[in-house]
Length: 530
Image 1 (cartoon, rainbow, N blue to C red):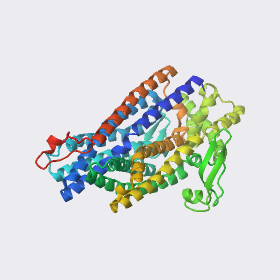
Image 2: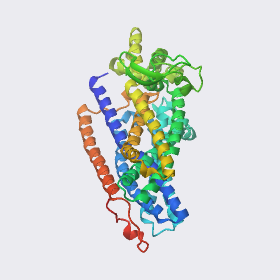
Image 3: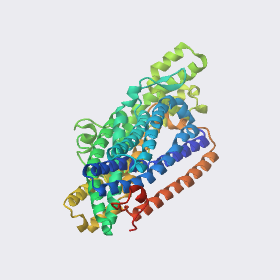
Image 4: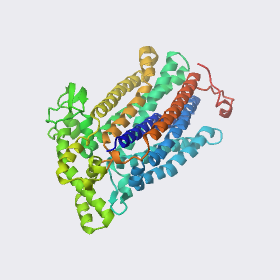
């Protein structure tokens, strides 16, 4: 394949990855803070204590900042599908567009409408009505994530779609199958509860900062306790759902699982260790400095002690016949698109399930046209294509481990925080408070690496085993891609700087003080300096 085109593909991938990762820095906090706000306001409605109202309004202020910037960073991603990934958009647009449209109409507008009522309706709505509004905002933000992940799940585990050789596109066959794709359901809940973990650490970390400085002590102690309890439950849920996703990947994306676990050779149950540390070498297909825990990997993935887990070398061997079959499928499809002969359509249907491997092999064909591959050159093409069937092992392996190690750390921290806060001893443990304050960025990092695990692990496919990334991009020049990439870097750096500046500013100012005779409308922008 043309070197310039490969550069455009890699630049397009890098730009989209950068855009997605920037946007995903804001998403988890939005998903989690909404339900923490709802819990705090529920306590206010039930008990009538003003401090819970203070808590809801203060943390709501930080939520509002994050929400506004998150929306701004997310809009550009939808445009990138059309500008940088035109082949993908044409091929998959009928499937991908539906959940995105529903997300915009049903979730995004519902969330955006009610968020105004949540901020400015304190004196205009009854307590019960305002609480309902807050829950609607929380529900809307998480429904928004659900529809996006429904679309993403179909890329990882295609469901409810069928390739039409007449239009050369994937067409929808079952909206129900698309929505209830097991990968979509597990990933949506996993992503939401990861947001709960992020928000819990955020609230707990800022509360720990106040306690260290002996400011807003009752406010901080109550916020800390609620966040700790919310966090421990959410961490257990995120680990459980992570196991469900791992099992789905084992069943449907074996190359991703092999890369996540650094498995070059097929495992030998039940001894196979789960590797704690290792340095995968993709070129030599081996791991250096391996340190693992034996008898863990097999039951972790297969949920038994007998089933072997396929390694990358074995998966490459199995891919050989699929690549040959895929070449026949794509060749027949191209001939059929030109001549519409029934015999070509019959050949295509016979090999259709391996079509994606034919597309993957096309990059090594003369002029990227598999019909021009001579029979004697097929073994060479197959050998080259085999090296492309799995993702970057080093990146996938370590992205997964960083996420897992951080999840274990969160469980320990939230468990300890819940214990000391329930015993009302939290201010005695100043070193622990400092650790929690410095831990605020860690859930964001864990979420980013979780997304990297999912998206890098799917490679070399945009739609798993159907459409390779290498033929999904638009035909831009490399100069255009570099120029737009620099523009995105500058724009998004401004967004990040604005987010950090505003968050630090209002977190340092601390919660507002409510006087009995003063309306909340008059005091909503009044803060006590720390």
